Image 1 (tube, rainbow, N blue to C red):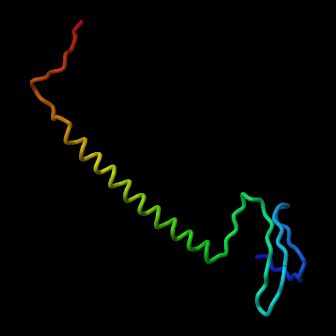
Image 2 (tube, rainbow, N blue to C red):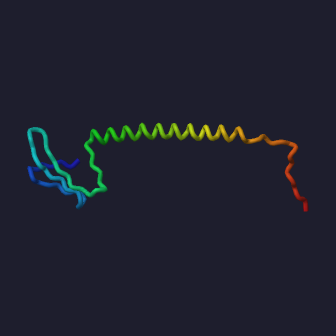
Image 3 (tube, helix red, strand yellow):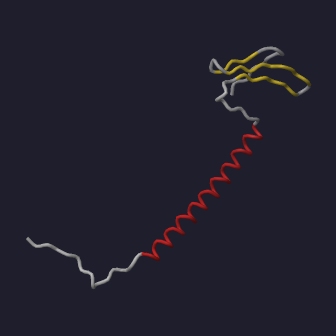
Length: 95
């Protein structure tokens, strides 16, 4: 981890296109401003953790429902498959 000391108005530059500015300090709180390209998503850590939890829960339910769908399709299709009947013999051409 890189640890820096900055004063109000000072900036950090990340990868030439992300700019972090110290806007205000008040007691043990620091207000920062971030300029970044639109395609860069920025989250507070607690929000990011909630998003990750929601994604895990969502993927579990999707996997479960997908498995149910496949099992139902398999069950429906196996009902329509007729067992092999000995009265129908394959035609074999002899030369």
